[in-house]
Image (cartoon, helix red, strand yellow):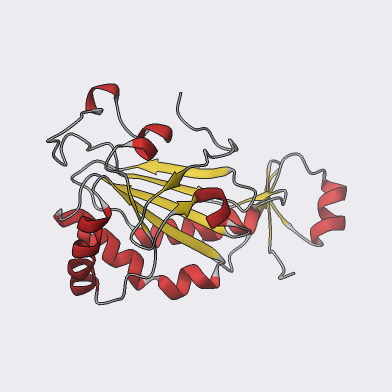
Length: 218
């Protein structure tokens, strides 16, 4: 069975281009994004790693660590990084896990059973390894998504989703469609009108079950 929202994500120890990673210890008290790829030196994945590298300052502002997974070894990762930096125009400052034995891919249920191949696999064999997991500081899964081989991920949307998760985490609010930072949020149905006023002050009643308010900075 795959990971579900609010599950504690599996811990693991793995090699990476920056040394051994003990995943839960590496997360520490930060948010984390684990994003996976089926093979080094593949075109879509190279552009995606470049996009993540370009957003280094944005991840840091959000107290978020990013870590890549690709099903090749450390030596291949170190060679590939030069291509990523050429395409992305930014330094790769985050780790890339070497998952050449598919241990992390299996642990996070990224692959169908028939893709657990021993040797000589291609990117197509591990095509399902195109997943994103956003993890909160308590090591719980907050969001996951998986893309097909043909569709490059929109890391602007992943950044927006991270903003929404951080805005609503452990707070009785949700974000409406297409929400971005600074826009109104929706008060949870579990909050009564009286409690909503006490907690948020004035709020807009769009429908009896749709009440909107502005989040104030802590």
